[in-house]
Image (cartoon, rainbow, N blue to C red; front, top):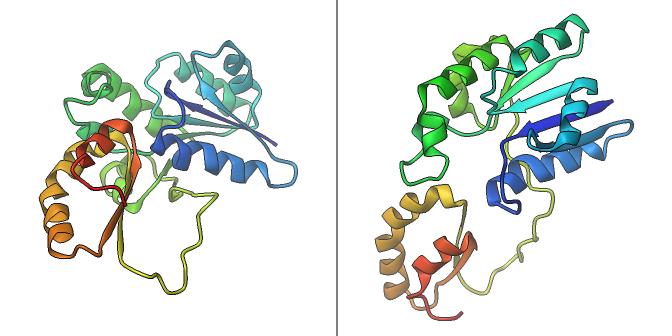
Length: 209
């Protein structure tokens, strides 16, 4: 079985790409008889793959060219599923993707493709509450981490961790006063941060630990 996952263009190694696409696709590819190909519509090779794939997953696609493709695949009894892995209607204005997802034509195409697909998949139950009405066939596939560093049974001291993509910049700014207060009140507490460099710059005040 060949599974094709078509996603928006990206720079690679982004947090949400890793746990929403790269590692879930890797896990699927470990199954016997399953091949998974993931890429952008900007790749010429993907155009042939999405035609031949046994299963096609369109991730937040907003392209009218997929409408006849989806119709042809349905006639050939090859399912196409639509993936919504983020609340694209609530993208912060500063985000580089905001202009695209705030455009009413793109929003309309996403709604149309999601409703005409053979099924809708999301990454958390909350997204079904917002977009579940678009398709009666639906499933939740939580974000997947393939490799997780095991925690010690009895940590020597408390460590607070933050992991998030650049899309959570404003969330991080909002909780920053609380983090500063905790580290000031409890010097033994340490902080571990995983994210884009622009997020790490917010923690310049934290001493090396």
